[in-house]
Length: 362
Image 1 (tube, rainbow, N blue to C red):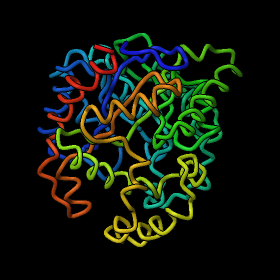
Image 2 (image 1 turned 180 degrees about the vertical axis):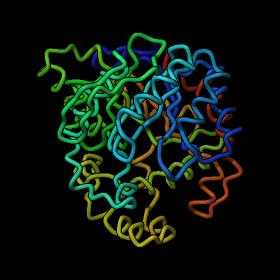
Image 3 (image 1 turned 60 degrees about the vertical axis):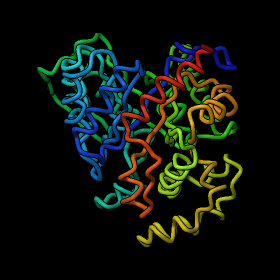
């Protein structure tokens, strides 16, 4: 626990989210560093575009002792929810009770590539049903459900978690229905692409509304934001790296979420259209620095702390996940080489030594 927010919530800790793009040996090194410096959680993105998150987390289980390991987000559309729960239970056994998952329908652009129409997903009811089935398998080892999206009859598993309750956070972006659902049924929310005070307050208010509607205490829930970021002594390199990643995420953001950052959606529409054509360089060219900076929090450790204190902590969040990017990914995506951007494990050391202590007031 590191700080108190403006809503009198104690921050659980600082975490990182990693894209499993670098070689596995580098990912494991980064996760071990997160364990060494005492970060709360390492989230790995679970998408076809990267190395497999679950296998990497399993490999990391044996070389870590403290840090929580989580898929974030684990998609339960291409993968059956019970298979995700089985993997999570096994990971919890491997870690001795240090596993969690943020689950959601997954990257909508990815689902389209697999031939699914996002308009037919019925996201909130699908996630409500998935949560109930996953919770049953994790808690009891059995599931009997006749659902709208999945039906299970006498399903059972030998995969049993080490802990009595494995956390399931609901991954969400635009809300409000998914934010409210997280407050109503899940252990919390793992929210992407909310950086402004307005967007973060909207997120927290709707999670609270869902919790209160279900008779739950919002203070018992984990309210976590995944914040696009990069950390370096060379603040300009870190900001350039995060801007590249932010530009990639813009097309996935609902128009209303974009506008909660004080940006008319018409300003980002040409960027989205360029990405849709596969013209990444043109999309990046159309993303000015001042626009990208609204959708990331990056720079030196001190610059990041300043933004967190000004825009993030007052909202009532109690968990911060800095979603990092490495030099190789920036080069591959944009053609920009950034010698001033350190490897992931060094970025994580900066977070542990220079960001966490400042948030703790040390």
